Length: 263
Image (cartoon, rainbow, N blue to C red; front, top):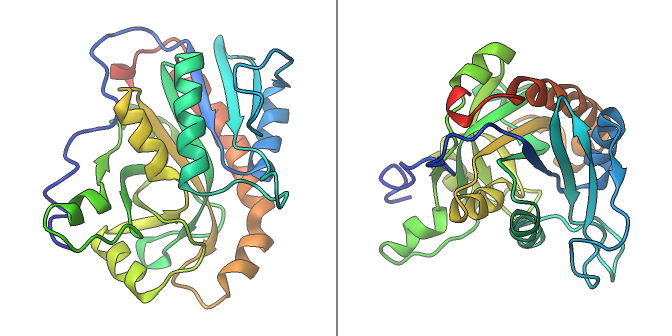
């Protein structure tokens, strides 16, 4: 796709201030991904009155951990069908409202993703994203094609990556669980190691508000493997959620008392 390498050279949310991290917002798309971590961190669901409008199904779980004020937010269930409100639109709205209401010093987008074994991904691996891009916003008009891809560099966290021995990879986001031939072409152009349904949307909002972002994604399915995606995703959801509930507390412990520049 033309122009992929020319855009997105700036990093998400590199702040001008050097404040110590005190409030962390954790954005998670699915309840099944969130609840093991909620329990691990011993967070409680927000009581009324909510910081969110009454009309929305969004959930917030809050508490303290490692001296940090931690808020986990999820888009909640679709009012009409009762399934998790996955995809870029619900999570971008949730991220926007959470930033405005909670004023986080750092956002962590935690969740599951497909991984490419050709890039070294295996089931249960937790990757930290180095770049964010889209693969289903196909706009074949000059410059708009680059806008559609929307590449952004992640907030630099070299010390954290080294300390926790995290795997790194570029992330490509789309609103479908499957992968069409057109998607595959753009994902390859994005040089993606992991494929998800929310990351680039969270990055877009975080970048608007200049809030640093760390994306942690646990691999549920091998995109370039032999198993059907849906079958593998459902089979490994609990494994991936457990990996996240183990990794996110380690990240919180590391960032506590530090500035973004220390990461």
